[in-house]
Length: 505
Image 1: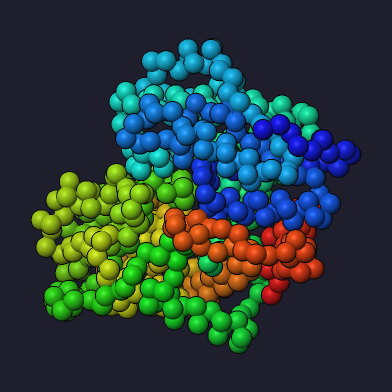
Image 2 (image 1 turned 180 degrees about the vertical axis):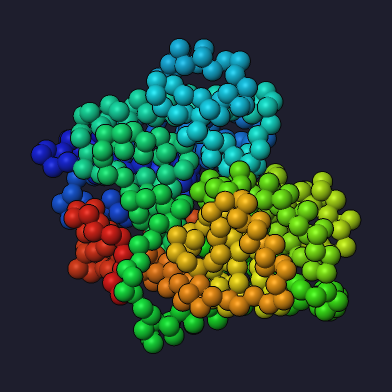
């Protein structure tokens, strides 16, 4: 696959890189970067695609968790790249092994690999979220297979860094667009770009169907700047209420993933149990390997340590019924967690505690029905916390979430402060929800839904084969001009003039 267009002249190019969004087929995030590239080129902005050409010993989507020794499916990936970038400017990178690095990595254990630094680059740290995501667990085994994969990822990340350094020196890019920013290929490119003071934009799936979220920050942390003067109008409130009405019935999806085919109300047995206790407190968990988790682990090293810290508290308050709700994504086909809250519940023998009920990820019980009965709810970083605040139920969060950047929930800054606030809540007969939490939660959710989620619906439809994958609609080239599309206007202005990636009011 040779370069098809000569290098750009005086204009600095935008470099686009997304090696972790697909192998074959077209994922939503692969389509977002491709459509962005087309729109920028039509606007006169040179674009270069940084493309892997067997440039990694192991990659995120090409790793087989059951057989980490299997080579990645590079042939299929390259065939797809040829189709996607047929008429674009590309810079290929292949794999050049660093013998010194390879020798240095030999014999290191998992703890040493996690903290590994090479020539000033924290490669172990860059690779860790990818390791957890691929292996579907937070706590990594210190075994032969895990150490082998960790070494392969570090070697691959270093090669990406070296090859991208060459691109930076050759083109002096205006900016860089990468998927996610957490998986190691894109995280490495972002790291190199920031070192050279190059503007980096990351993207992820937005909240609305067929929508993307673009930001100069870390997309998985979802930084959103809401003007202090912003107040929902009557029409905006009605628009949000219409969305919430569907959401509370389970009629929602993200990145074309629909978690519930149906939602069930509370059983008569659970209602009977709730009535037998003085108070009722649901606890909502997350998927431990999700790329949002590193942002969340501030006062606890991980979600399971948070759950462990709750057990003595639960024992202390036998007149309060606690329901632990496992996230439905723990058992998503093809992405099932290997370190689950269900397993934690068994290992901690929580069935031996009379005032705990456990609801597994396979049970389609309505979380909103639990919230309506609650004295208050506890979350780690689950979005259900934002929705509970909208429902005027007090929320105590143990992890940093997208919405904790605003006063939407109770979010103590230290573990001691968190446990003190929890004890205070459990002792109180009733907790009054803060009006500010309700107001700020609605403001934040509205911004997420209607200001930051850029719609690609004109250009994409479900491919009907793989969930979350898409195909292009029959749109015209002029549909990719800013005067004909709000999304394209936002993208072109964002890249060309540095404006925030926000829809109009």
